[in-house]
Length: 322
Image (cartoon, rainbow, N blue to C red; front, side):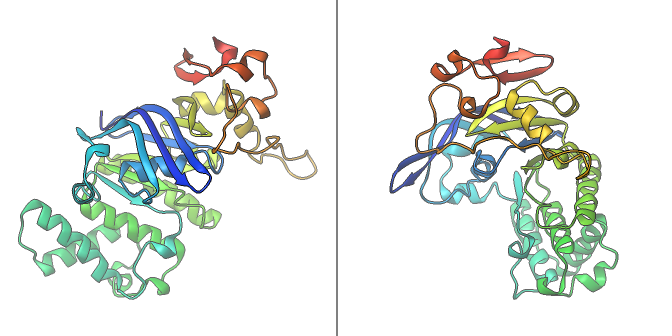
């Protein structure tokens, strides 16, 4: 198992008290597997990705549990030690492509800096000519049409899709075991989204990387994921094979997410929505956190928190199946 998360609790210190962003997360990610973390804004998706590479803000606290990445418990590392896992064990692609690269440095400079890091890690002497050749190869690997031209440009001269491809190429240069993609397509148009998703699938097959794909769009997740991990208010609602979850969701929240994906034209029907809003994480509701919005709520849901149960190759937390 490449990544194993056990009973993870993370909170943020605020002026109003502790905000508990993740509450008892437990799941694993195999080598070469892709898992999509889906849920509404505020469910804890980005916190999970940032926690794995130790990039949480200073007001965040690991309150309990462990994150075992490549045999190392990330939560026990010092800040200096945590730097060593970034790019080597895990590489993160952020949501906004325009903020992913240094705007005053050319693409070649930034790619060579990434290679310099890997050479130092491997104890090799830096050969600029060899490194430049490898950078061009990785740009070609991410389907950049003219890598020789693009590598000499500045980020502002590139489109959003080109920047995301450059960032992915930098990840390939570092040869990470896990790629964490935090909403990598949300700032791109639909055509470029499809190209980036296809590219990630191709790279996973070619390089055998594991992918943790963070998104609020379950239809996008289906294009890249082997499994779905559905988060709601910092807790796992349902986890299982993507085809099973997509075609026959069990948890009411997963069902509501899938039903809210637009599939009809304006003439054919109204867009389905999930009533209410996500809870205030400073004081989440008692019992099942989804019960104030659930159409199938029972009295037990308001009083007690459900345990994990196994159904049809999935694990979920819902009293409907206990």
